[in-house]
Length: 218
Length: 257
Ligand SMILES: Nc1ncnc2c1ncn2[C@@H]1O[C@H](COP(=O)(O)OP(=O)(O)OP(=O)(O)O)[C@@H](O)[C@H]1O
Ligand SMILES: [Mg+2]
Image (tube, rainbow over all chains, first blue to last red):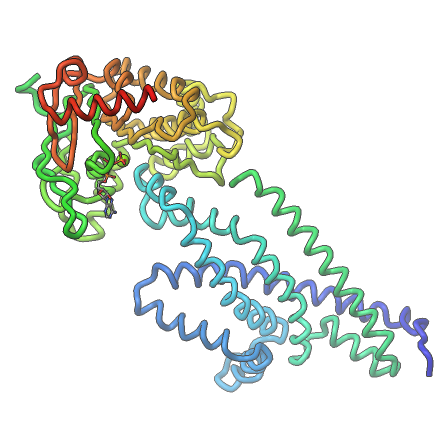
């Protein structure tokens, strides 16, 4: 059986809808991982020990166990204790928190790297510690960490394929369904690879644009 | 002047970092509208003294008063934070390295604190920023980022940022030391303008000429004590103390070389 890409058009709509789901999951999880990462970083650096420790344990769990397992736990596990999350939400939350933990490490480093004089200047104007953190330190920390955070976002896009295991019809799963009806794995996997690559390119273009925009604010 | 109540009153200030005594019983009274220069060799404690005034480097002993308010009060944490944030609004500070907020444009550098702390509307804060930036000659750069400015321009914006809080006192910690020589004068001019407006100022500086031309009083510090103080013409032209003389001689030699 040779290759036959002519089967693709018939299933193209399924695959493209899958691509839209992949984009939705990626964007959703990216937002969760970004703001979650900032929150976790601020907690790790400034919260009192009683708050810090539970979050530290949480971070260890998310860093030290497979993402796949975390998705299973959120989707299939939480139901048992009465928390029934839709698969899409479970995917966004699981993927988002997983990367939030990684982003938090980056944010912590960049928060600590902001020049001490910045906080001093803010405090001498009369800003409180929290106000200085919010208006002066965190914005600069975010600015400095955009390139590595961007890399995490691209890793996140690729890992979003794992969300297929809890039944979200994203790109990978919809390809598998098309393959199920056509028995043409090569054609569809190539198609999907191309689509991932295109989404990836768009993300990188946006990131580069953002990086250029913030260059002047250093 | 002597029986007038001081505007800023530093009483027996002491500061140690571990076993290092950086300030050893320093007292300083500054009247409203007075301009005091602090000079002295590196490591003598000038910055530490200045930073004790707004409690950035809290003293280990002694008191600092602004009018009838004690600045370095010991209070429960929460109350202290509120107290010190209020006090600091009344004390402007200018740093050697400007410490402008690089992620904000000049305009927002100036408007941020008044908006957050005094509840000014955007329009009010903008008007205020324009007023202060005009004063320091930086109005044309209001929509620039700090990275697009020269050192002298940055420092003038930093002064405008401090002035926007309408402080009662301005503290300058070597405001021109990090500048290329040709940029010093534009910052000095702004400080002179403030002097003409009778702003109360304490100025740590290595520029003896500037200190002599604007200050009412000069303090010479060495190793954590005030060795000698007096009017500029006495301190610079006819110092009594041997250490003051040595310092000035070395300093002048250094400047010419
Ligand atoms: N946070 C700190 N921890 C430990 N020692 C410090 C600290 N800050 C200042 N010192 C020490 O206190 C002494 C006085 O420092 P200070 O910065 O007040 O000197 P200065 O007169 O301003 O000197 P310069 O002209 O170099 O600015 C120095 O010996 C310095 O090393
Ligand atoms: Mg100093």
